[in-house]
Length: 98
Image 1 (spheres, rainbow, N blue to C red):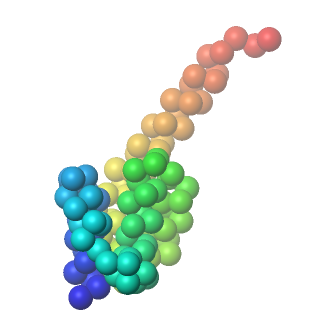
Image 2: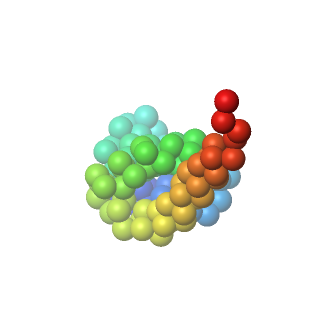
């Protein structure tokens, strides 16, 4: 039962934010304490806040089937993180030296 809920949360992570909000709202407090669901919610928070460090920490320490589900979107997030790092580096390197 927990794997089905985890799968729904992770699937919604890759698709529609509205569906994810509804899936999270339907979870009971006891379900949110399940390690797999807790991990999936932490992944969602990391993705939505752009906390790539936390996201990749969660990726290397998966619970249940979360790693398999994360494989579907982690490459996209890796590219997004690299783009932000590169953009920041270029912006800093173009600033005039004082």
